[in-house]
Length: 185
Image 1 (cartoon, rainbow, N blue to C red):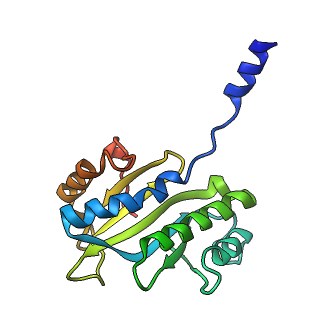
Image 2 (tube, rainbow, N blue to C red):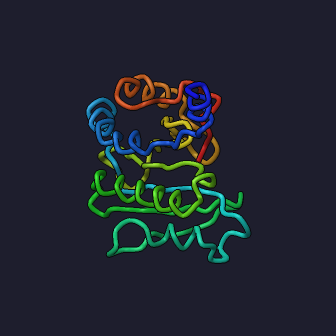
């Protein structure tokens, strides 16, 4: 009987955790002191909705209502068929922003859309130019890891900055070790 129980436990799927996403608060201190980057107060949750994006799917409705009850999230769509939920905090409060992003993720998962979730992002910018994000920290829920994405111009990326960020945050938050999984967002 014990053997049957242990087999049953192994076959259960492990639910991805949002705890590493909330740990990004600690990483923000390192990004500010070591790289001069601060949170912009903007972040996204990206997922692929079943059906055609923009037709008011249940997932889009759930995502739009999550987070702060005073303001509603902005739900957009890109050319790749992804739905992007943008959350923001005008004062750049990372704690509240992370809570909002975690709420969007959790509500979508509770509504049965966990397998549709692609990634969650948080934007960072140089202190002297907060209007133009220089770095996006990307959280892959299914892997429980982050990776840095530093766009450069319209098509490129600053790989040297990404590697520096990974090196400085490795002991702070779980970082994706396989650089081949670092996709532009």
